[in-house]
Image (cartoon, rainbow, N blue to C red; front, side):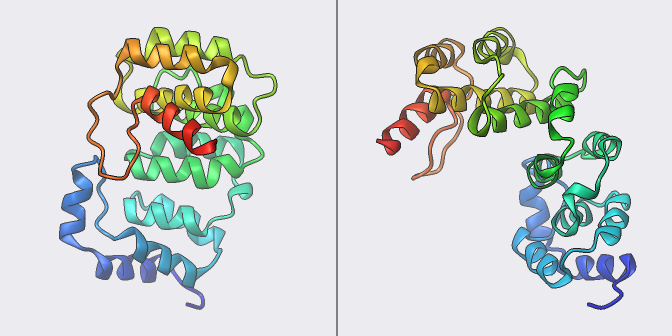
Length: 221
């Protein structure tokens, strides 16, 4: 696609729309009807086009925003842009892709992690927790892991769904990656029972932290 315009892309996305996919996605709180595989194929063809990505994001359309995440230059966004974008990312999939594919690659990720971690908006706070989980796994130096466990123990049980999920992921990663905190992480999970009954497909690991921790530690042996 040479000199591709937003109009061109939106027309192609409209052609890729699948009502059944939209119906399935709606059950998870998402409002896009284009299969993710089709979005990735389109992104591969478009390649990196940061200006186009900004324009697609500005449409507010979920499929366009997912595509924007795939064709942007993550390091080209400034700190304030990313702050606005995470607050605009209304649906779980757009939020998840933005944090994982863009914010984590940004030079502003640590500054944003600290700013978002205690944000009053639980969706924004969940982004702060997701970035913290990344630090727990890849760069735990200077993190207060016992302090994180204190917050999780106190707040996770009653946290809104998206924030609770992010805190639970952090709990699991602390238990998986840091043997000295494993017993406490498992104990917190057992007492809080968060996601204990979450439906899990055959062959997949339960997100219930004690099960998740034990299974990942077993695989690493």
